[in-house]
Length: 569
Image 1 (cartoon, rainbow, N blue to C red):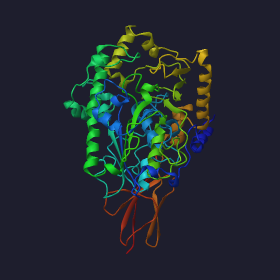
Image 2 (cartoon, rainbow, N blue to C red):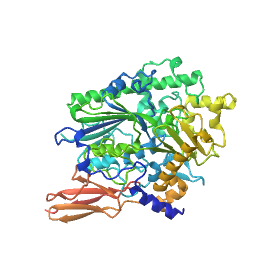
Image 3 (tube, rainbow, N blue to C red):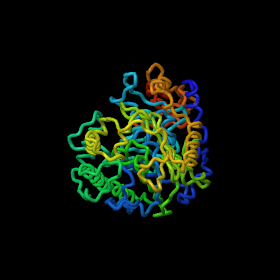
Image 4 (tube, helix red, strand yellow):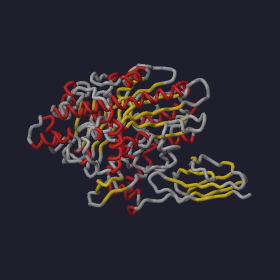
């Protein structure tokens, strides 16, 4: 396929239904029955722990010390078969925030802006992906519908930082900064469970931001108790059972035990502010644990995460659901619960619609470049079976990666590999070639160790999942099928970031309209000296002698130059 053909597919395929994809869900078919009988819109508190698999007592982990999460699970519907679209944060978060798989957005590489990321030609990569023009982050759609949206600082979507998504992108408190009585969507990222917090205190990242976050987390965690005995932790067969590895895993458990206190404080604040009776609380994590062959992997250890949904009326409290949930389902779910139309371009489906779609048959995940280390894997999974396709079987699974190599467990793997002391299961991740296809029975082999792709007894399953994956790729653009340089060139001609066209003002009496010539641009404006940026949703009245400043942004483009207007006397 030529680049032009690929980009045509890239633009058009978003409207194609995929596997268990969605259609537009009008508000008349929303989940209003799940909300209170009144016309008051529900609030949403969305709490996302970093780098954390289902290490929660309520999800079957006997080692975990998680009384807060366990109590919350008892009040919530539990979804144990929730899967991220990638085993690493930025690609996963870009899919979460848009409802579209990262390889279709162009956000699949980790990262698009990184000093360690190099093109195969040797030139530096530093770009923002440019999604198709109609794609919007779902908090912006909620904002357009009248919600106050806040985030506590972690975005990492790889298409820039559009100022139109959040009312407050670095909120001191998730909802207390909002105008009175305005419904809110608050996203809170819990950073203390991040991979880097397991590192020794003298470890160093090439990313200044990571070092700042680490210092903050280490300071916060300085009062952390050690509640986990390293002798009691379980070691998966793909990691060596040594004191170093046991200490790392125990430290991770301790970090979770400490970090869950943030959830307790948030829930207490909801009660204190009288908001618990109209706030839907969803708790999940951004991908699996921050260990080798977990984080960055598309095995279940990297993409299977816990999710809990607490409704104000207590429905499904403590009920465990087995249905497959993909991270591309979360945006449509929030929109549907808020009574907001779900765009037709999304790859996900609402979980609680009054007219629900059939449960999805499959989830899809991908793994691509990590800093300067190339990768290209895809996976498709049903309730039991996992199929993986390796497009770079010439590359071993483990290669040196500065960020991951800071972890003592990874250092241990390298040491034992150099000593030829790893078990065959562990050693295979350093070997080439990798199999082009992998097939796992997650019911009998939850660690996905025994590749059954060549087993004639499972030929029918292999054929079925291979066909399901091929159907997915036929209907959904995968921009890793072209080189990253070609992809960037298509988004940023001549490797230069496009700039959003400036806002043009149109006056009709006392009504002011704002437009930008850039397709898909979002527009924000300020009144007079007020620094607050309002999301433009349509013409508004303007009083005499009132001044307005406006700017526009298309995701992945540079912001437009601000323009100014003053209404005549």
